[in-house]
Amino acid sequence: MNELKKCPGCKKLKNKNRFKLYNGNRCLDCRNEYYKKWRIQNPKKTLAIAQKSQRTYNGRKRILWNHILIRLKNDRAYKRIRVTFSFNEFCKWLDLHKRYLFVYNNWIKKGYKLRYTPTVDRIDSSKNYSLDNIQILTHQENSCKNIVINKLIKKQLEKRGLWSSIRKEVELEYNNGLKRINCWCKK
Image (cartoon, rainbow, N blue to C red; front, side, top):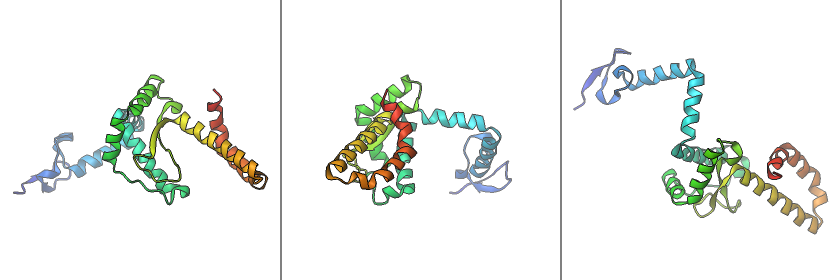
């Protein structure tokens, strides 16, 4: 049976399943409202809590998954790319691959520096995100891979005599984004 309970916060009768034992036994709505105000009043603590959870083994898995989804949603270049696995399948895949554990532990040892952050990379960038088409790289390795690929494409275009026609466009793109990444690869 549905038992009703009065919330001391909003003074309303609600189903007992809308209550948790946190925050003075208030209903979920009051509890969420309380924490919403708390996060606004304590932005530094909120940021610290978020950063701490993002640095955990499972928290980083969630971040990697979210980065895939955000990239698919916001980047026009990914319009035709799809994810062919679920979050749970992705987590199992990460647990089975020692590379993730190695990169994750190295990131911790290096003080959570951006260049050592674990990232998900598609092996063949023309294909979908599938478990057989992804690999774990550090942020630095992923950036360097893109630079090397761009250099190889330039060589192929030069061989075919096409480089001069698109040179300005490529150099503009390079100057906008890849220049600051290139300094990591020289180290």
